[in-house]
Length: 561
Image (cartoon, rainbow, N blue to C red; front, side, top):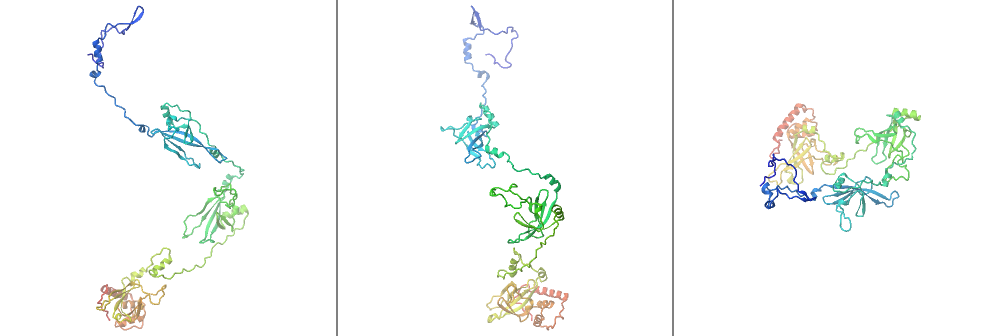
């Protein structure tokens, strides 16, 4: 068996001298006939061996190349879209400017599922619903059920889809490359027809105005930064809640524009923005416009307005109507005066007196007390929009903190069982409130304890809107005090009450009634009472001692006579 023909297994014969090729044809009698080879001829056995020869036994098993991975069409053609530019003509009815309009569209062909979408680019202010005309789907080609295929598309081709004929006039670069790779020759791009109405819209409007001979450059050079300044007021007092508001009118000579600035005063309740009317050219009368002007759908321009405010329209004492508001000019500055002297020969510049007389304001009437809450709380709802808590006299509270005047009393009643009831009336100097405590008694059938919680008590007969409250002056020994329809007879007072009354300016009768009850001689005048600071300190010291002993009410407390 011969060696396989591989590198390293071929050996050259160094004795070989004949390198010509073997001949298979020869001439015999002038004819070309095949030459019978007498050497290197294969025998039948050799041919049989070649017939049964298997290269795998010599070279081994043949290597198999890896098979290509199968990819479906929706993966290969994913996000590959052909884009064709097309247009269609739509008939316009009842219009003398145009008979049809050209609407540009883009046809998107999706290779993954042969679906088509037609979209119209949005044109501003077209008045036509635009955007997606035909949603993505397979579009029918004819009545036999065939659908449009990308092979049917070409530049210059017309596609009839749902009654509309679209003509393709161009496509993008990717579409050109893809069609060329598939062997389809595209036609040359065509020119899209123009819309007659859009052409007329793009043309500049013809102007029939005669150009003015006024030199604006000269006006700018001569009158730049020259401003007329008038002091005026906006009189709005004829309306409900109207008022007179001071303003300043600036007229700019460089371009005949004007602005109005409002003069703010402290605490005027308005936003601190001085510009009332921004700088602009202001017409004299906005209602003086041609009748044929469609004001319901169009705004005014300089072509419709004939008269604008100029320096000749301003005069001290003149009332101007500016944008529906009434302004009275009452003064101007020195530059404005000199300008009017030179330009209009005006010599009179007497300012007007626009100061308003302050009328007598009506006094605030407080409504009667409605009975809800305390009198002070109800009064706060009448003084401000958002009620505030009533203000307290904190100095009085700090000076008289924990200072209480205690009195012993019995009830004055027609019932016999009420005459045996004993009460302790506490008067708080810090807020002038009164609390009543009833001393419990055995076998009386009446529960003792708190009779009246701490509150302010009005004197009987006082008006509800201006009430009079009880003071230490009213609590004399033997005096009858009416508290919420209950009458109490003051029978005794503690020693601190006497010290407190003697240290202040109280009636001598009240002081003597307590002195007699305590077994002291009555006084004729208050001159004998020591009202010095030393006496006050002794009074406070005595009160602190008594306060420490009687912090809580003691039912068994015996008043000293």
